[in-house]
Image 1 (tube, one colour):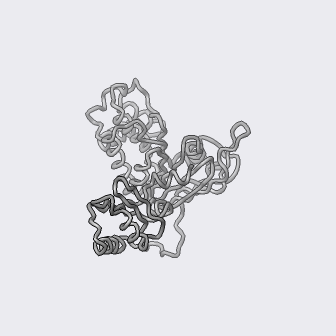
Image 2 (cartoon, one colour; image 1 turned 90 degrees about the vertical axis):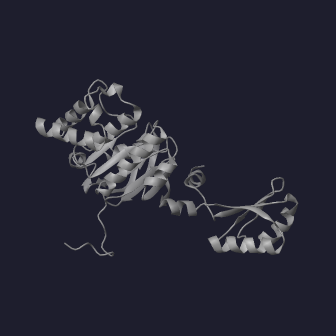
Length: 318
Protein backbone atom coordinates (compact mmCIF):
# COMPACT_ATOMS: atom_id res chain seq x y z
CA UNK A 1 0.00 0.00 0.00
CA UNK A 2 1.50 3.33 -1.03
CA UNK A 3 1.82 6.20 1.42
CA UNK A 4 -0.31 9.31 0.83
CA UNK A 5 1.27 12.08 -1.22
CA UNK A 6 2.18 15.33 0.46
CA UNK A 7 -0.78 17.03 -1.16
CA UNK A 8 -3.28 14.58 0.34
CA UNK A 9 -4.76 15.64 3.69
CA UNK A 10 -3.98 13.39 6.64
CA UNK A 11 -6.97 12.50 8.81
CA UNK A 12 -6.71 14.07 12.24
CA UNK A 13 -6.55 11.93 15.36
CA UNK A 14 -8.09 14.84 17.28
CA UNK A 15 -10.00 17.67 15.66
CA UNK A 16 -12.00 20.45 17.30
CA UNK A 17 -13.82 23.46 15.90
CA UNK A 18 -15.15 26.35 17.94
CA UNK A 19 -15.40 24.51 21.27
CA UNK A 20 -17.18 26.62 23.89
CA UNK A 21 -18.07 25.90 27.51
CA UNK A 22 -19.79 28.03 30.15
CA UNK A 23 -19.81 27.47 33.92
CA UNK A 24 -22.25 29.38 36.11
CA UNK A 25 -22.69 32.10 33.52
CA UNK A 26 -18.94 32.46 32.83
CA UNK A 27 -17.58 31.29 29.50
CA UNK A 28 -14.39 29.35 30.19
CA UNK A 29 -13.70 28.20 26.62
CA UNK A 30 -14.15 30.73 23.84
CA UNK A 31 -14.19 28.82 20.55
CA UNK A 32 -11.12 26.58 20.73
CA UNK A 33 -9.85 24.90 17.53
CA UNK A 34 -7.41 21.95 17.52
CA UNK A 35 -5.93 19.66 14.88
CA UNK A 36 -3.66 16.81 15.99
CA UNK A 37 -2.05 14.48 13.45
CA UNK A 38 -1.91 10.74 14.23
CA UNK A 39 1.20 9.54 16.01
CA UNK A 40 2.20 12.96 17.33
CA UNK A 41 2.15 14.83 20.63
CA UNK A 42 0.21 18.06 21.08
CA UNK A 43 1.21 20.08 24.14
CA UNK A 44 -1.66 22.13 25.56
CA UNK A 45 -0.19 24.89 27.72
CA UNK A 46 -1.71 27.67 29.77
CA UNK A 47 -1.84 29.18 33.25
CA UNK A 48 -3.98 27.63 35.98
CA UNK A 49 -7.62 28.19 35.13
CA UNK A 50 -6.94 28.72 31.42
CA UNK A 51 -9.30 25.89 30.41
CA UNK A 52 -6.86 23.07 29.63
CA UNK A 53 -8.50 20.43 31.81
CA UNK A 54 -11.97 21.48 30.65
CA UNK A 55 -10.86 20.93 27.06
CA UNK A 56 -9.47 17.49 27.90
CA UNK A 57 -12.70 16.52 29.67
CA UNK A 58 -14.73 17.54 26.63
CA UNK A 59 -12.52 15.64 24.19
CA UNK A 60 -12.56 12.53 26.41
CA UNK A 61 -16.41 12.66 26.64
CA UNK A 62 -16.49 13.40 30.37
CA UNK A 63 -18.08 16.80 29.72
CA UNK A 64 -20.35 18.11 26.98
CA UNK A 65 -19.42 21.27 25.14
CA UNK A 66 -21.94 24.09 24.90
CA UNK A 67 -20.89 24.84 21.33
CA UNK A 68 -18.64 23.64 18.55
CA UNK A 69 -17.79 20.16 17.33
CA UNK A 70 -14.98 17.71 18.02
CA UNK A 71 -13.89 14.30 16.76
CA UNK A 72 -11.42 11.89 18.32
CA UNK A 73 -10.13 8.86 16.38
CA UNK A 74 -12.67 9.78 13.70
CA UNK A 75 -15.75 9.76 15.96
CA UNK A 76 -17.85 12.67 17.16
CA UNK A 77 -17.40 13.19 20.92
CA UNK A 78 -20.95 14.46 21.31
CA UNK A 79 -22.87 12.09 19.04
CA UNK A 80 -20.69 8.96 19.42
CA UNK A 81 -19.19 9.06 22.93
CA UNK A 82 -19.14 5.28 23.27
CA UNK A 83 -17.06 4.86 20.12
CA UNK A 84 -14.65 7.53 21.34
CA UNK A 85 -14.25 5.89 24.75
CA UNK A 86 -13.33 2.57 23.15
CA UNK A 87 -10.39 4.22 21.45
CA UNK A 88 -8.90 6.50 24.08
CA UNK A 89 -7.00 6.39 27.35
CA UNK A 90 -7.09 9.12 29.98
CA UNK A 91 -4.62 9.87 32.74
CA UNK A 92 -5.69 12.74 34.97
CA UNK A 93 -3.78 14.85 37.46
CA UNK A 94 -4.44 12.24 40.15
CA UNK A 95 -3.94 8.52 39.71
CA UNK A 96 -7.24 6.78 38.90
CA UNK A 97 -6.36 3.57 40.69
CA UNK A 98 -7.31 1.85 43.96
CA UNK A 99 -4.91 2.31 46.89
CA UNK A 100 -5.77 -1.03 48.51
CA UNK A 101 -5.46 -3.21 45.43
CA UNK A 102 -2.14 -4.47 44.14
CA UNK A 103 -0.68 -3.20 40.90
CA UNK A 104 -1.71 -6.39 39.11
CA UNK A 105 -5.22 -6.27 40.60
CA UNK A 106 -5.69 -2.68 39.48
CA UNK A 107 -4.76 -3.43 35.89
CA UNK A 108 -6.72 -6.69 35.82
CA UNK A 109 -9.82 -4.90 37.08
CA UNK A 110 -9.50 -2.28 34.36
CA UNK A 111 -9.10 -5.09 31.82
CA UNK A 112 -12.36 -6.65 32.99
CA UNK A 113 -14.05 -3.25 32.69
CA UNK A 114 -12.83 -3.23 29.08
CA UNK A 115 -14.69 -6.55 28.65
CA UNK A 116 -11.57 -8.64 28.46
CA UNK A 117 -12.00 -12.16 29.80
CA UNK A 118 -10.42 -13.05 33.12
CA UNK A 119 -7.43 -14.76 31.53
CA UNK A 120 -6.95 -12.04 28.88
CA UNK A 121 -7.21 -9.29 31.51
CA UNK A 122 -4.56 -10.97 33.65
CA UNK A 123 -2.27 -11.46 30.64
CA UNK A 124 -2.66 -7.82 29.60
CA UNK A 125 -1.91 -6.70 33.18
CA UNK A 126 1.28 -8.76 33.29
CA UNK A 127 2.35 -7.44 29.88
CA UNK A 128 1.95 -3.82 31.01
CA UNK A 129 3.60 -4.42 34.39
CA UNK A 130 6.66 -5.70 32.57
CA UNK A 131 6.62 -2.85 30.05
CA UNK A 132 6.56 -0.24 32.81
CA UNK A 133 9.11 -2.04 34.98
CA UNK A 134 6.61 -2.81 37.74
CA UNK A 135 6.72 -6.63 37.74
CA UNK A 136 8.63 -6.79 41.05
CA UNK A 137 5.95 -4.63 42.70
CA UNK A 138 2.97 -6.33 41.01
CA UNK A 139 1.80 -8.09 44.19
CA UNK A 140 2.20 -5.07 46.48
CA UNK A 141 -0.71 -2.80 47.46
CA UNK A 142 -0.64 0.49 45.59
CA UNK A 143 -0.35 2.42 48.87
CA UNK A 144 3.23 1.12 49.15
CA UNK A 145 4.25 2.55 45.75
CA UNK A 146 6.38 5.64 45.34
CA UNK A 147 5.01 8.64 43.44
CA UNK A 148 6.86 7.68 40.28
CA UNK A 149 5.61 4.08 40.46
CA UNK A 150 2.03 5.28 40.90
CA UNK A 151 2.25 7.50 37.84
CA UNK A 152 3.73 4.67 35.78
CA UNK A 153 0.91 2.39 36.86
CA UNK A 154 -1.59 5.10 36.01
CA UNK A 155 -0.08 5.46 32.55
CA UNK A 156 -0.14 1.66 32.18
CA UNK A 157 -3.84 1.70 33.10
CA UNK A 158 -4.59 4.01 30.16
CA UNK A 159 -3.11 1.39 27.79
CA UNK A 160 -5.13 -1.61 28.92
CA UNK A 161 -7.64 -1.09 26.11
CA UNK A 162 -4.89 -0.53 23.50
CA UNK A 163 -6.04 3.05 22.75
CA UNK A 164 -5.33 5.06 19.60
CA UNK A 165 -5.34 8.37 21.49
CA UNK A 166 -4.19 9.15 25.03
CA UNK A 167 -4.96 12.26 27.06
CA UNK A 168 -2.33 13.04 29.71
CA UNK A 169 -3.48 15.82 32.02
CA UNK A 170 -0.38 17.03 33.90
CA UNK A 171 0.99 13.48 34.20
CA UNK A 172 4.26 14.34 35.97
CA UNK A 173 2.93 16.73 38.62
CA UNK A 174 4.81 16.16 41.87
CA UNK A 175 7.39 13.78 40.44
CA UNK A 176 11.11 14.09 41.07
CA UNK A 177 13.32 14.83 38.04
CA UNK A 178 14.43 11.21 37.57
CA UNK A 179 10.85 9.90 37.61
CA UNK A 180 9.77 12.66 35.24
CA UNK A 181 12.51 11.72 32.74
CA UNK A 182 11.47 8.09 32.95
CA UNK A 183 7.86 8.94 32.18
CA UNK A 184 8.99 11.10 29.26
CA UNK A 185 10.82 8.10 27.81
CA UNK A 186 7.67 6.00 28.11
CA UNK A 187 5.56 8.63 26.34
CA UNK A 188 8.15 8.81 23.56
CA UNK A 189 7.97 5.03 23.15
CA UNK A 190 4.18 5.14 22.90
CA UNK A 191 4.30 7.76 20.16
CA UNK A 192 6.90 5.70 18.30
CA UNK A 193 4.32 2.88 18.34
CA UNK A 194 1.79 5.18 16.65
CA UNK A 195 -0.21 6.41 19.63
CA UNK A 196 -1.42 10.02 19.54
CA UNK A 197 -0.97 12.02 22.74
CA UNK A 198 -2.57 15.24 23.96
CA UNK A 199 -0.52 16.48 26.89
CA UNK A 200 -1.34 19.27 29.32
CA UNK A 201 1.49 20.31 31.58
CA UNK A 202 2.76 23.03 33.88
CA UNK A 203 6.34 22.11 32.98
CA UNK A 204 7.39 24.02 29.87
CA UNK A 205 10.52 21.91 29.60
CA UNK A 206 8.22 18.90 29.32
CA UNK A 207 6.31 20.38 26.40
CA UNK A 208 9.57 21.46 24.76
CA UNK A 209 10.91 17.92 25.05
CA UNK A 210 7.83 15.91 24.05
CA UNK A 211 5.47 17.97 21.93
CA UNK A 212 5.54 18.06 18.14
CA UNK A 213 3.27 21.10 18.28
CA UNK A 214 2.11 23.34 21.11
CA UNK A 215 -1.11 25.26 21.64
CA UNK A 216 -1.19 28.00 24.28
CA UNK A 217 -4.49 28.85 25.96
CA UNK A 218 -5.05 31.92 28.11
CA UNK A 219 -8.40 32.82 29.66
CA UNK A 220 -10.14 30.20 27.54
CA UNK A 221 -8.80 31.51 24.23
CA UNK A 222 -6.16 30.13 21.91
CA UNK A 223 -3.36 32.71 21.86
CA UNK A 224 -0.66 30.83 19.94
CA UNK A 225 0.00 27.59 18.08
CA UNK A 226 3.12 26.15 16.50
CA UNK A 227 6.25 24.16 17.18
CA UNK A 228 8.33 25.00 20.23
CA UNK A 229 10.92 26.66 17.99
CA UNK A 230 8.26 28.75 16.24
CA UNK A 231 6.91 29.99 19.55
CA UNK A 232 10.42 30.83 20.76
CA UNK A 233 11.20 32.75 17.60
CA UNK A 234 8.05 34.76 18.13
CA UNK A 235 9.63 36.26 21.24
CA UNK A 236 12.43 37.94 19.32
CA UNK A 237 15.95 37.54 18.01
CA UNK A 238 18.66 35.60 19.75
CA UNK A 239 20.93 37.76 21.88
CA UNK A 240 24.68 37.79 22.25
CA UNK A 241 26.01 38.73 25.68
CA UNK A 242 29.55 40.06 25.68
CA UNK A 243 31.68 40.60 28.78
CA UNK A 244 34.64 42.93 28.34
CA UNK A 245 37.79 42.71 30.43
CA UNK A 246 37.70 46.39 31.49
CA UNK A 247 34.28 47.94 32.33
CA UNK A 248 35.76 51.30 31.27
CA UNK A 249 35.75 49.95 27.70
CA UNK A 250 31.96 49.61 27.63
CA UNK A 251 31.38 52.96 25.79
CA UNK A 252 33.78 51.94 23.02
CA UNK A 253 32.24 48.50 22.77
CA UNK A 254 28.76 50.06 22.69
CA UNK A 255 29.77 52.30 19.79
CA UNK A 256 31.17 49.35 17.85
CA UNK A 257 28.27 46.96 18.52
CA UNK A 258 25.49 49.43 17.84
CA UNK A 259 26.32 49.22 14.15
CA UNK A 260 25.86 45.43 14.18
CA UNK A 261 22.79 44.99 16.40
CA UNK A 262 19.28 44.79 14.92
CA UNK A 263 17.90 46.36 18.08
CA UNK A 264 18.94 48.42 21.05
CA UNK A 265 22.16 47.38 22.78
CA UNK A 266 21.72 46.98 26.52
CA UNK A 267 24.63 47.47 28.90
CA UNK A 268 25.64 46.80 32.46
CA UNK A 269 28.46 49.31 33.01
CA UNK A 270 29.32 47.99 36.44
CA UNK A 271 29.84 44.39 35.26
CA UNK A 272 31.17 45.33 31.85
CA UNK A 273 28.48 43.30 30.01
CA UNK A 274 26.71 44.25 26.78
CA UNK A 275 23.78 42.44 25.14
CA UNK A 276 22.94 42.79 21.45
CA UNK A 277 20.34 41.29 19.15
CA UNK A 278 21.56 39.37 16.11
CA UNK A 279 19.79 38.23 12.99
CA UNK A 280 22.49 36.06 11.43
CA UNK A 281 23.71 33.74 14.18
CA UNK A 282 27.36 32.71 14.00
CA UNK A 283 28.16 35.19 11.24
CA UNK A 284 26.96 38.02 13.47
CA UNK A 285 29.00 36.68 16.38
CA UNK A 286 32.13 36.55 14.21
CA UNK A 287 31.52 40.09 12.97
CA UNK A 288 31.09 41.35 16.54
CA UNK A 289 34.28 39.64 17.68
CA UNK A 290 36.27 41.06 14.75
CA UNK A 291 34.92 44.59 15.27
CA UNK A 292 35.76 44.57 18.98
CA UNK A 293 39.24 43.20 18.31
CA UNK A 294 39.90 45.92 15.75
CA UNK A 295 38.72 48.55 18.25
CA UNK A 296 41.14 47.19 20.86
CA UNK A 297 38.42 45.97 23.23
CA UNK A 298 39.45 42.84 25.11
CA UNK A 299 36.60 40.34 25.49
CA UNK A 300 36.53 37.73 28.24
CA UNK A 301 33.27 35.97 27.36
CA UNK A 302 30.74 35.51 24.56
CA UNK A 303 27.42 33.87 25.49
CA UNK A 304 24.51 33.13 23.19
CA UNK A 305 21.03 33.33 24.64
CA UNK A 306 18.09 32.21 22.53
CA UNK A 307 14.52 32.76 23.76
CA UNK A 308 13.21 29.85 25.82
CA UNK A 309 9.71 28.38 25.86
CA UNK A 310 9.35 30.07 29.26
CA UNK A 311 9.99 33.43 27.57
CA UNK A 312 7.37 32.66 24.93
CA UNK A 313 4.84 31.45 27.51
CA UNK A 314 5.22 34.55 29.67
CA UNK A 315 4.94 36.87 26.70
CA UNK A 316 1.80 35.11 25.43
CA UNK A 317 -0.04 34.75 28.74
CA UNK A 318 0.77 37.93 30.69
